[in-house]
Image 1: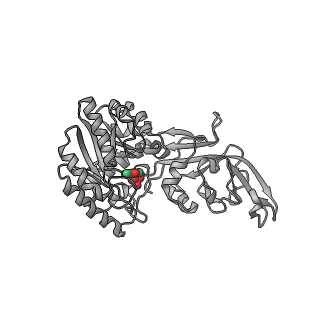
Image 2: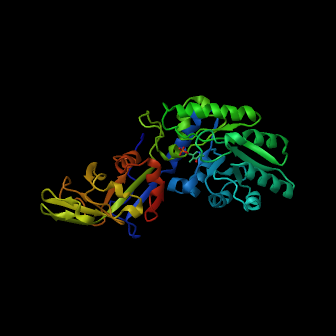
Amino acid sequence: MGGAVQRSGLDEMAGKGGATGYLTVDLSAIARNYLRLSAMAAPARAAAVVKADAYGLGADRIAKKLYACGCRHFFVAQFDEALRLRPLLANDAMVFVLNGLQPGNEMACAREGIVPVINSLEQWRQWAAAARSLDRQLPAVLQFDTGMSRLGVPPQERAELAELVNVERGIKVLFVMSHLASADDPESVQNADQFIEMERVAAALPQFPVCFANSGGIFLDKAYHGALVRPGIALYGGLPIAGLADPLEAVVRLDVAVVQTRTVPAGTRVGYSGTHVAAGETRLATIAAGYADGLPRSLSGRGAVFCDGIRLPIVGRVSMDSITVDISALPEGRLRFGSLVEVLGPHQTLEHVARDAGTIPYEILTGLGRRYERRYR
Ligand SMILES: *Cc1c(COP(=O)(O)O)cnc(C)c1O
């Protein structure tokens, strides 16, 4: 990651409010990431993907900030997320539901001014029926499956949909879209395969602008950008393609409190099932975040936290509410009840934690629990 999030003006000690963890979200860094991605994609415009509460960081605050930066296209996954977000944004902003038009939601969707991503012929027909019964035009994005087999109109139904689109007056199609399955790997042939499929879609419906690239797609060839790009992870500081020069800024910082320290003699077992046995006399600290707070159990005996830039390895199993770390490398007395250690920050990025946990930054970010006090800068 690029610029480090500076120490956030947190007290050295856990706050008086009782929180034992602080998740600091740098809204200005998100704004700068948005502007940087917009510049990379220009002349295409950049949307913002704020599904799953903006990858766990707070969709309300983040969407408003991005609106102020000029973003007008917001993607969520679910209708409920759109319902919550829609009233927070001015009318010239559009809120799109990636998971499609749920049967029975047509009228609510139309009433609230939410734009469904139409994923099937059936959804198209339902939306067209809603437009007829309301006697007005309704907006939509049309999603096509170009090789991921997840969402969108399948190739064998493309021609039929194109025919319907060309005669339907009740629906205003804003974009034709698809989603890349392997944009995190620029070498993958799947990118080119999907690109060719997307060109076929665009040829069948040439009157509509294309929306294709997620964060990874923005870093692929310009040809992938279409008219509107849809970054998610990159807004939040996650580098979509490993090993690239990173133009993005870190956005999150996570500091968690120590809740107990102790010194144990050689041979002492640590944590559930006693998987760790102290090799020599060891100073330990118990930190108030565990798998219920989004530190996966796969970090047992693998991950670390930091204090004063010094790596403090996790020893033994990750518990539900805590982890235990070896603090022998720190001066005695440096950490005590209430002291904060860095879980995410200048010394440990999302990518580091994800790698240690055997997962991807997306999963770490969206899993950061509800028990941290969230602070916005
Ligand atoms: C989640 C999602 C995105 C954003 O993906 P990132 O890799 O986070 O940029 C874009 N488009 C669709 C359809 C998605 O589901």
